[in-house]
Length: 167
Length: 460
Image 1 (tube, rainbow over the protein chains, first blue to last red):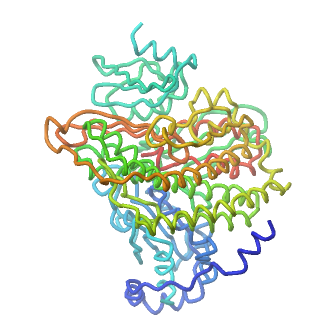
Image 2: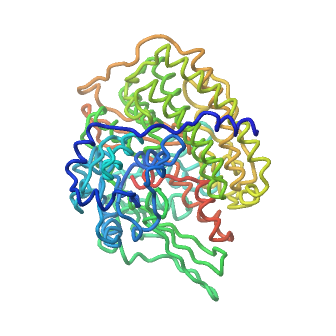
């Protein structure tokens, strides 16, 4: 048993900071003011507004030892009142609209919204469904989009780091 | 007595299991299982009235509530007519069921939860720390999946089926593919069937590893989450290496599969099986030797075997409460593979974790057998596009990691006329309500995780 636990320590599994040229461009679009304010870290509240749960699996993977997002000053928080960033997944369903707006309203300003995944970015395969209102931008203003179905953890991390201006 | 009423009686008497109940135009359709035989009964009457199944057999209640609100059909005698998936304008004044007694208080939780999980509402009524009643309210991630599929070609609809519940994307893709093939009389090549099952076992492995870690983490044992997280990540990376997508989304389509497995892929998977086969038993022995962990899991959230049976609970939820059912017994290639199906009778969090642990070992064995005996040949059979070959109906019952997924499809002129998908969570969510009664509020997260029902798969 001890051997198994020590084997894990012998070689670090945590990987180097991911880079993604797509997000270097996005980072330039964010104002200097945003980056100055967020420069030290981000408190992120994740909100599923209608996802198939694929995006949640990959967002959860950010906390595993390979990606270890906390080393970059990124952390997930339980309350929107503690959050700088609302990370939204899924097309926004009619049934989640109220909860999304309430979570956003509960966040202190200044605040930013990141739409993660193809559904949150452009409604994905659920476009045209009467049960969905559309992409996140149909309900609240979005500051950054991380595409993918679902976006890989490396991509999510690169996108969030772009928000910090580290990319 | 009509076939419908006879079916209602056999369900209520526990002689058959409810598989699903849905509306298709003017017809109410009922799927039920007696032994290995799956039957579909139709009820069509003027005005859309049919005798409610939920009236005598409670597992049908939520299916009938969803049916009634989204179709013109009327289940006569349905005891609960509150909205279910369509929240509508009355969303904020939903009438929860009452709980009466002295000194009771309520705790409303959700739809937005503290962790990175899907949305749903839990209404706890408690006496002190003890939960007297839990009532769930679901439907928040209702995306209108079934209606959206109508009018689409099988290939277009397959993309939607693969996103009914992302964690089970492979199982749903298989269920959709098999149902369409059966409707059109198409036989997929055997290499495709074997590769699809390989993907299904990788999906099961990844999810079970994630669940074992997450259950232990809810008992403040983060070490297990880290170690299981490493193994889970290795499975996802191997899946990406072999099939080009970490969750293997859109790799299975009606007629076969899109991606072949290379010799490098086979070597990669053999190394993965060897690594997990070596490390996972040691992690399980760590679980076995940690008294503080078992103190939280043993005896917590007991699901009674009679309820598991009545609700036809699939997957680890049913198998941890004595229900010996696994849909893999009924389809290819599992009929020519060797694997054990573990059943326990304790019905607690510990039993649900141990069923997963046993299935991890079995999946490793299945992957090895598939790699050893993978048949050669083409990856896909063509589908007939036009009438009359493009019409018909078919269904599939496929074992995803959390239980049996039922999917029924009716095609007209090469397009989807009606598609109905029933996630195993439909019958597991109501059982979570009974399993948590009498437990303390603080044990809800670990109990909920041990069930790990899908919100998206249920809400559709």
